[in-house]
Length: 207
Image (cartoon, rainbow, N blue to C red; front, side):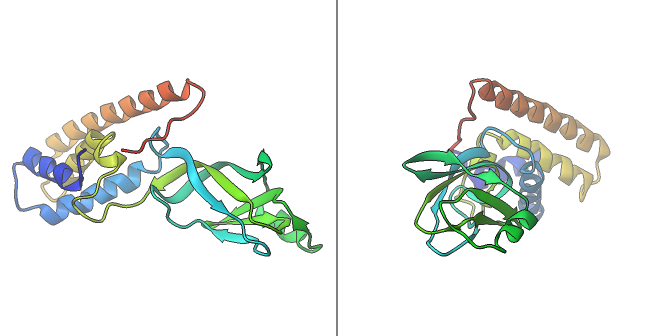
């Protein structure tokens, strides 16, 4: 399994330069941030779980391996005997409903910032599962790895090379070459994501 150091070393080899260490590191994180805004098979899953607490309506979505935060929540389910869907509402609707407080199993939820608010007020510990598109926890050490250094390694590699040839190297021809390579890799990952989705369910990636 390739880690962050292996990716940065490969990029340095592509550049044939040893004096851009900090620029490579920054560009890798920037490329991951930019491409993380798109949904792929490895950042779309349902592994985020938590339980409500009696008397608490608001829950922050905290980092939970491999999830840093949700970009889009598609569905949320709660457990009471069996799993059932909790319906999404806008925050203003949930706030108005609390004008006449009620407690019980979660029936509605609203998203605001990186938090969830339930209605009615949970009166027990209800297990919750969240489905959607998320950002992976950022890589902070060279020995760390995730889907960006494995399944999407070439996408990030070509994106970084494009960025560095644009600046500080300022070689427009090479920048265009690697931009085209980035686009080809992006299309490959999109096709792979579509192929997996045709099976009826997105498959979590744990690499």
